[in-house]
Length: 354
Image 1 (cartoon, rainbow, N blue to C red):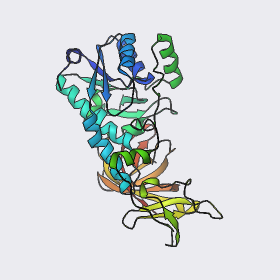
Image 2 (tube, helix red, strand yellow):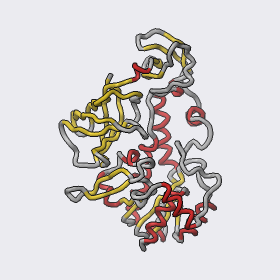
Image 3 (cartoon, rainbow, N blue to C red):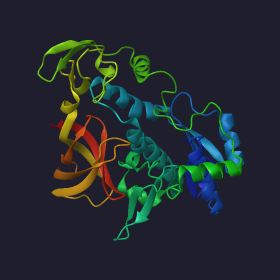
Image 4 (cartoon, rainbow, N blue to C red):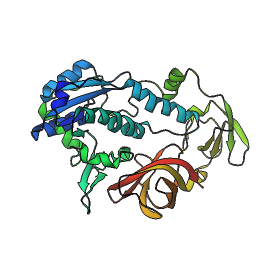
């Protein structure tokens, strides 16, 4: 990919999504006197128009360019997304995308171009720890904190990152944005659960992507008794209550998905609890610990976290035992580890510990 002249001169590149948060991050850095360039990543269909991005960059008074990373995104994120559902797992494409694309492929291209810093509109903070090394912390606005999604970043990348919104609340960002009179795209949603599925369900997206979905199979209870039939594994995730279509005196939930037998296991609320989980491919943003560690385990975004004991077979995997049992531990999801507001790292949930 050729190096844009404005990129070669930049002190910091801002991943410019087209939304309010990344635009405000660029404005704050610009006001600090830094040479800022906006970089918009074209990852999939949809997203803001080129006209909106042009107007936004003009309003900010910064140069901008677009990078077409659709091939990388398809290979690293979309294929992963489809593959996990086929395996009966619950993917987390945002965690995957941050590590592989935004702070992976994008940073590689920026580093090749000589850009020393990458900034985003994430609500997270970087602060030096007791040993002087940078630590990744929750954003001050706990309702908007996005540090969970950054758990798989390479530790060595932290000195090259800037999170200008880390000390701000969403309300403050919205007020500053309005004061600057920057344009809003009427057809661009500020926050999207899955940016690559602007319309329809994820099952419809998977069908279009793969051409077919999994075969129907049995719905069974925890003792193996057949309760009915499912529509294909892609329609279910651990913890799901709606759409099961099995009458019962008390609500059923999806407790487990068994791709090897093409079965979806249903149970009552009390059967949904787990005493822990097994984590693999753990990435550490601190010096990798050995042996045992106590931390707050966050098993999905918006989960309040639970105190847990980590028993590490090696720095990359181990058991996580909760202080109190938790519901809907979903294989394939990401678990993040915190001590107070410091993000220690995170891994993939391989299986639940009953």
